[in-house]
Image (cartoon, rainbow over the protein chains, first blue to last red):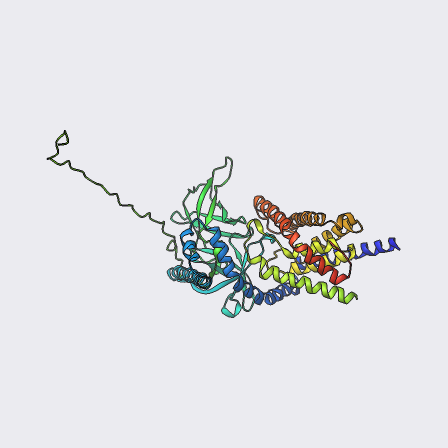
Length: 310
Length: 173
């Protein structure tokens, strides 16, 4: 009896393993039904993710304030003096202000380049346990968004639309390990390929072994055929270190993205590229340090004072 | 009876899946965070017979494969969770010293979580998924193990209660 039970269990295990392998095979062969299942799940989950986002926004802001305690200590001190209701209102207002600020900078960037954009709120982030970096936005095919469109923030490139549903879309972030974008260095126009590393930095591989790159160089998206998946001229990041490995065919470098992926509230999808390449028009201006005034005091000894002090 | 058991189990897993996708994933925990859905699956397997654990692992794997943030092929999580759930139940079933001790269950689930992620990463690599950097993967896996060690004791009583409710197993931890 016991032996029979074990055999039955093993048979079930084998059936389940074979079923899993069957599903993997079907998926790798590109059966459309399976893609539809994932889209269906996203459609079902979207309302829950929206609700979760609404509920969690004050919590996330609170946690964000704590993690930035050193920088926002004065602000937190002020907030402590207020009652709970005012504090909640302030946090909500702060969130809205942040979104407006992000939206304004996106519009500035898109206006300079002549991009036609659709702005959207970030309603969910993908789990990093799946070793991918994605976000879900609250705009989809009904808003004119299509697969492989460029997604930007006010700082620069954010990612590319990976999947589109009626009212939402999934965006692969530039930090995703599978993300690759052709870039050129602002000014020198040298070209290379930038690949995500799963963190806020990326790896740049130059294509020409005759060219050189230096720390501080700014990278812009080179643009794709028909501007999909990448429109040209979008700021991508800044070179933070250069690798000069002996024997390497071409130079490589580490790049820090301009976009702050930790605080994406509002992003924009470029639905139409400009007729002309903006070239280096979108290159961010380096911040100029504010000069500190030097106070010089001249002291002139009084002619009436005697050396004895009388 | 069978319908009631699996109906209740399905409802519980769907609920935890929605909570994971709508709430837990939205919170940026350091070092990759944790998945209450994975912890639930592994805990459930640790409290079940190997047959039930394999079936539950299959269902949970399908749900995880359907998650929009999953990049691997459909069936990838399913395969990993079927094998891991069966393995956990196979090694712990009948050993009351192991199952009756909450500490053992917590350690088993934590170890299983780490093995699941490593297996997912390796098989994903073999299936052609894009691989993140070694350092980033290591941080995610170690961080996930740490978070699982923290979260599992909090979830264990309620999961054991739900398991009792679904299977009338009189399991007391």
